[in-house]
Structure formats: structure tokens, C-alpha cells
Length: 247
Ligand SMILES: Cc1cc2nc3c(=O)[nH]c(=O)nc-3n(C[C@H](O)[C@H](O)[C@H](O)COP(=O)(O)O)c2cc1C
Image 1 (spheres, rainbow, N blue to C red):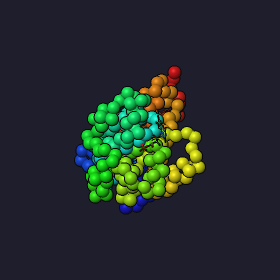
Image 2 (image 1 turned 60 degrees about the vertical axis):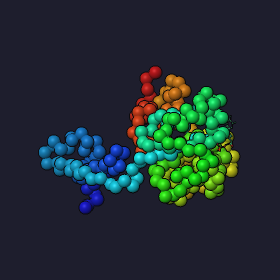
Image 3 (image 1 turned 180 degrees about the vertical axis):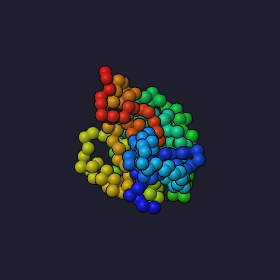
Image 4 (image 1 turned 90 degrees about the vertical axis):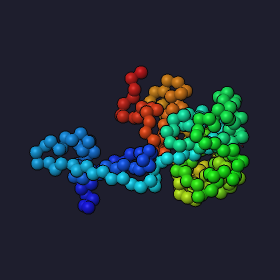
């Protein structure tokens, strides 16, 4: 195939079929022209050819593990569990459970009930602890600096840090959402090392261009950006389209 004729590749997740559906537009001058069909109606202009094919399951997200650790911002993790449409497994650390009670008046049990599966953080014989057990992504949100530091050094002393270690060695998606400020040089060095090892470092850092009206909007921005990284469509916030929302 002459790649110069390929205008764009459009992919979307299909978790039920465990496939990524892709549309390949050939001879289409631009994405907009191809999708609106403008060029197709103009005489003498080559018609974009839409071809459908499926990639195998590799890369398709079907099982997401959520680790919740003892940093402020527990509501990010809880909201993520409410929004994920894939199979979910959650592990809540002891410190996270205490902070959840304080920040949200929510028990560890109530958090665990939001996922299909859950394990104790000290259960190192849980399936997640083995690279042979299949999951597609691990999101640690919020991620304490303690947990982040351990992962960056290869320490795997609980189920969350062990699952992160598995994600890195198996080259699976690892997303860390730290909440700490200011950051020490050691924090920054640990984050750099993790980023170089393939992890996505995604500080809980809301944007204000969507003009949030309340704390839920602020939380949804961060959770929406996490969903972006794991490939799930959502409408948790209004994306930047070049203009501020009318207040
Ligand atoms: C109320 C409270 C808030 C905390 N907030 C943070 C935080 O925002 N970021 C952080 O890195 N650690 C924070 N910590 C410290 C962690 O909870 C502590 O380092 C703990 O050992 C983390 O354990 P874990 O990573 O196994 O959950 C907080 C602790 C408490 C009690």
C-alpha cells in the first residue's frame, strides 16, 4: 500500500468484542473532508475508500486495576471506579481507607463495592501479583509519594506495588496520579525514573478552562483525563475547542 495516500487512521475500542475497530481512509485529503463526505461529491475528486479491519485483543482495554493509596484526593479514585465501563479490580491501602473515612465519610467496603473484584493490599498471593494473570492497565489514584517511591525503586512489598512492578515488567499500562505539593528533588527523580520506565505520571492537576462550577466538576476533569489515558470515551468535561464557555 502506498502510505502517502493514507490520510488518517481512526480507531475505537470495542470492549465487548475485545477488538479495536479501525477505519482506514485512503485518498482522503483530510479527516474532516473524509468524514463529512465533502470531497466525495465534488466531480473529479477521488472518493475516500473506507476500509474496516480489526486488530487482535492486544491493546484493547478490558480489565482495569485501580490502586487507591493514602494521599489526599480519595474522591478521584472513587469517582474513577464509578465511571469505568470495563471490568475493574480495586485494591485499597490501609492509609487510603483511613483517609477515605476522614475526607469522604466512606468506608473501605463501600469503595470496594464499586468494583467487580477487590483484594487486600497485604494479599501477595492474589492473582494480580503474578505476571501470568491478565489485566490491561493499572491506575493508582491517588498515588502517595510513598507508593510512587517504592515502585520507582522496584520495591514490591504489597499488592499495589507488586502489581505496578508486574505492569512495568510486562509492559502494560501503568498510570500514576500523585497528589503532593511541593515536590522534593527525590519525588521528581522518582517520577522521572518511572516515566523513563514507561509509566504515565499524571498529577492530580485540574484545569480551569472548562469553567468548573463545583468540586465535582474539578474532580471530573482529572478523572476524565485518566479515562483518556486508558482509552475510554467520556463526557465528564467539555474539551477545549478554542473558546471559553459562556458564563
Ligand atoms: C490525612 C493524610 C493525608 C495525607 N496526604 C498525603 C498526600 O496528599 N500525598 C502523599 O504522598 N502522602 C500523603 N499522606 C501520607 C501517606 O498516607 C503515607 O505516606 C502512607 O505511608 C502512604 O501509604 P500507602 O502508599 O501504602 O497508602 C497523608 C497522610 C494522612 C494521614
